[in-house]
Length: 393
Image 1 (cartoon, helix red, strand yellow):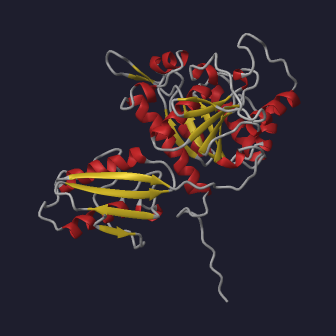
Image 2 (tube, rainbow, N blue to C red; image 1 turned 90 degrees about the vertical axis):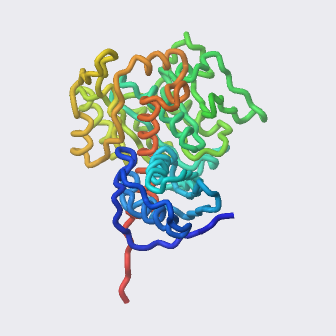
Image 3 (tube, rainbow, N blue to C red; image 1 turned 180 degrees about the vertical axis):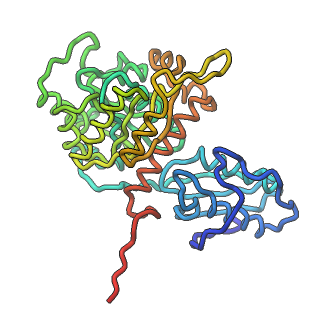
C-alpha cells in the first residue's frame, strides 16, 4: 500500500524550512524529476529539521510511525502517528512540501494519545486519559468562553474531548453550548449520560438546577456536588477532559484541585495588572497542590479596528508574556477582544464551528495544539525532552 515505511531515528539534518505556521518555506522548488526515493528523502529530512514550540527537536523525533505513498502520479500521501493533536500545524508542513516538490503532498495525522499520569475514578472515569484544568485567578477574564472554544478546537484537531463545569455557583457551560434547557438522562439509573454538543461531551450542575435558582451551598457541599458530577457521569472514551474551574483561589478551588486527578492546568488572564496579580495567585495555588501549569492564555489581548485594522492594547500590552517569563512557563497564545466571540457565546455558538478557517478559529486551534503539545513535552515519559538516566557499573 505504501511506497516506503520508516520509523528509525537518526541525527537531525539541516533544512531551509523553519516554521511553516509563519512562513511556508523557500520559494525555489525542488526539481520535479526527482525519483520517488529522493522525494521521500526530502519529506523525511523536512520532518526531522522542522522546529516549532511543539516540535522543538523536529516532527520525526516524536512520530511512532511514518508511512509515505508515492504511487500516485501527482500526489504524495503521508501518514504520521503522533502523541498529541496537531493536524493544523502538520497541514502547514504539507503546504510547504507541496510548494517545494511541485506536486500535492497530503499528510494525515493518526493520534496515539496516552495518559501522562495514572489515576482511577469511579464509574467510567477510567475512559478519560488526561484531565486539564482551565483556571483563572479572578472572574471576568473569559475563562469559560475560552475553555469551550479550546474544546471545540481540540475536536477540530482530531481529539475526543469532554468538558466538566466545576463552577457550582455560576455554571455557564450550558449557555455557552446552547443547551440551557438540556437535562441529562441515564441508562442504568446510576450514571448520568453527558450532554453532547457538536461532538463535545459536557456535564454541568447547570443541567440539573434551574437557571433562575440560586445555588446556596457551603464549600463542602459544592465540592461534593462536583465530585458527583465527575464520578457519576458515564463519560465515553476521551483523550482530554477539560475542567472549567471556578474563578479565584479559595478553599473550593484548592479542594477541587486536590480531589481531581488533574494532569496539568492552564491559566487564563487579561493583560491588565490587576488580572495578572490574581493569575500569579492561581499559579501559586496549583504549585501548592503539585499540579504543573502548562502555560498562560492572554485573553482580550488587543482589539483590531474593523475599519483600519489598527491594533489597540486596551487592557495593557505583553502582560501575559511577562508573566510567563517570570513564572518560567509558556505563553500559549493571545486572543483578541472581538465582538464575534461575545456574540457566539451569547447564542451558544463557537467561532471554531461557525467558520473553521477564520482567524479566530485558527487562533483557538493553535492554542489548543500548544496546550496538548506542552502536556506531552513537559510531562510524558516518552517526550524527547524527558531526561534519561544512565547508570555506569
